[in-house]
Amino acid sequence: MTPMRSAVLEAVGKIAIVERAVPEPGPAEVLIKVSAVGVCGSDVHYFEHGRIGDHIVEQPLVLGHEASGIVVGFGTGARHHHLGQRVSLEPGVPDLTCPQCRAGRYNLCPDIRFFGTPPINGAFCEYVVLHQEFAHPVPDSLTDEAAALLEPLSVGVWACRKGRVGAGDRVLVNGAGPVGLVTAQTALAFGASEVVITDVNPQRLALAIELGCTHAVDVRGTALRDIGFEPNVLLECSGLPPGDAVRTVARAGRVVLVGMGGDDIPLPLPYLQEHELELTGTFRYANTWPTAIDLAATGRVDLDRLVTGHFALDQVSTALTTGRHDPGSIKPIVLPNT
Ligand SMILES: [Zn+2]
Image 1: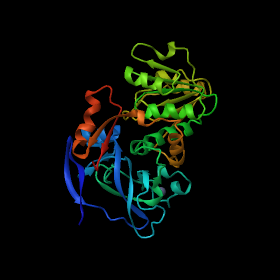
Image 2: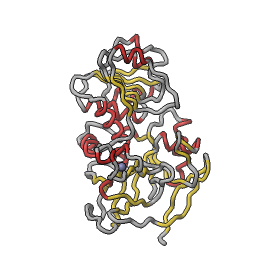
Image 3: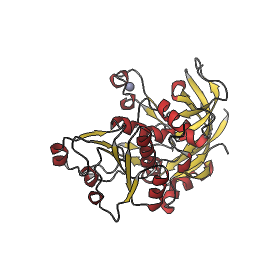
Image 4: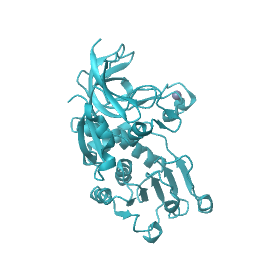
C-alpha cells in the first residue's frame, strides 16, 4: 500500500494523524490530491459532540467536506479530466437512481454518501477519491481556497434559488457567519436591490458591509422591528429562533431556513398564515457548482476574503477550535499536503 496521512477523529475532542492507504479510485472515480479544505461549523460540532442529530460518529472518522484538489489518478472509465486538472469537490454523491434523484432533487437522496458525515470519511487527509461528475474543474483564476469554498457558496446559491431571489428584492440575511456572508453576496449577485444582514459580531458585520451589504444590524443593541426594513425575502442563516426576523417580512414574502439550530425551534405560525408567507427548509444543494464557479470566477462573490487562517494537517484540532477563542475567525483553511 502507498501510505498517506489522515486526520482522524478518534473520540470527542481527539484527532490523531494516522497513516492509511491512499484510496483506489473505483469505476468512474478520480483520485484527488487534496489542496485546501475549509473548516465548517458541522466539523466543529462533530469534533465537540460526536454527533449532529441522528448522525452519530460510531467509528473513527475523517472530517472535512469543503475541499479542492488536483486530479492525479483515474479509475476504470473515468475520462472527464486530464492529469493535473484542478477541481472543486462536490462532497455528496447520491445514488442517482432513487425517486428523489430522478426528480432532480439529488440533495434529498436517502442514500447520498457525504464527505465527513458518518460513516463516510472526509477530506482532512492527503488523497481522496470521488466520482468524476462531482469533481468540478475550476479556472486557474480561482485560488485553492476559493475552489474549496465553492461548497459553502453552493449553500448560498441554493438558499437564493429556494427563495427565488431576483432583481429588486429586499433581502434580510439573519447571521453573518460564513454561510450568511456568502448568501448575502449571492443575493446581491442575483440582483437584490437591498441586502440587510444581522449578527452580534461587529467584525463580521463590518466585513458584510465591505462585501456589499447595504446595511448591517448588530441585534445586541437594535431590535429588528425598529430599523424600518420590510424584506420580502428572509434568508435565515443563524440557526437561532427566527421569530423576530419573520415578523418583519412583507406580506406574501418568502422565508428560507438555512442555518441549523436546536431540535425544536419556535416559529410565529399565525404571522406566517395571516401574511401568506412561504416557508421552506433547505438541505445542502443540487446543481449549484456551475453557478458558484461563475460567481466566484467573475468576482461577483469574494470567497478569499473569508479566509482567516491556514493550518497544516497536524493542526486540524487547532483549526477546529480557533473560532471558539478568536471572534475575528471566519473560515480556517487546512492545507493537507503542505
Ligand atoms: Zn437517490
